[in-house]
Image (cartoon, rainbow, N blue to C red):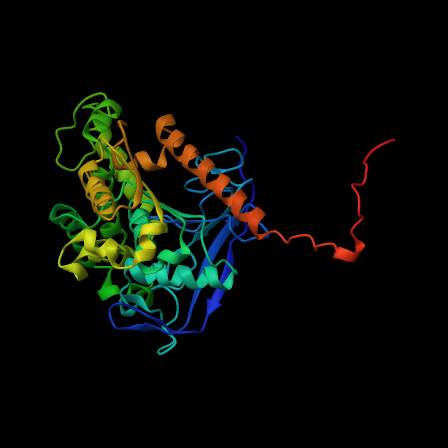
Length: 406
């Protein structure tokens, strides 16, 4: 199947203040985004892709550096999310480090980089920013919103914040909130960053340094949680890095150690430390049931328009970070509201990372759902097409007009 090919990121500037759940205001900001495919005349075939922790707006195709989009195996011509049928939009959220306004950009009040002073973001804030971008693009209603992990939380938040603007919601490898264990993993990762001597209270930009040691450890911790134990054992086992043990507390002895250090080193060179703190906090804070006495079903019942959304929830059996049990909580809350919901639990060995991979059963589920959405979109487009003007009654012939040769 073909790629969408070279793509160019676009930028939209917003001068209208964005009120945040924290009570702060983001007064002036820019969002970076990419689009793939063609928006139809009825503007009814748009699909929004929400990114997870360390991803970006670059969902598919090849960017200016030749890097392939993080969900290129899913999005493109003939792929499950077919860009010959859909107009796909990837947006980089505020606070990220891939072009949208974030901690490394100048604070208008000081002229210095925002650093640790950048306002704390929530999933709901990101969704509100995405809604503004879609309005600027002239898209009033999405055919679908889709995301995995933290992106799945955003997809769910769309149905709670702007349900009338969504026809379908696809939440993959996600959860209705983080467990205490997940919050604990995030906190350990954050402490690794903030205790790095080069962090300088989040204002390391002013010192010309990067807290790379902390970022390396944070990424290593996170990466362990993304892999299933069986997958880690089958890939690395107890294989040694070298032919014999060095009997050293400092040396890299096992291949799994080498792998984690490589992942940490790579991550520390391209990701921003303040962004990592912001995004993991947004994960911690997401809990739509909190405003409804802890009852998720009541959260989905809050706006009747939510019941008009079609839901697909997907989980993976070996994902212990966002386990299938958490997805089933979402499904139960939707069933309690008589919402139209389908659930797929994929027996895949890859752990949480499975939502990024090529499992044929997983992609088959998504392909089938998008084929259904495409059919609905085609009907909507036909209904929106201009009707031919009626022939005035005085101009109508009094008898049938024969067609073709006589």
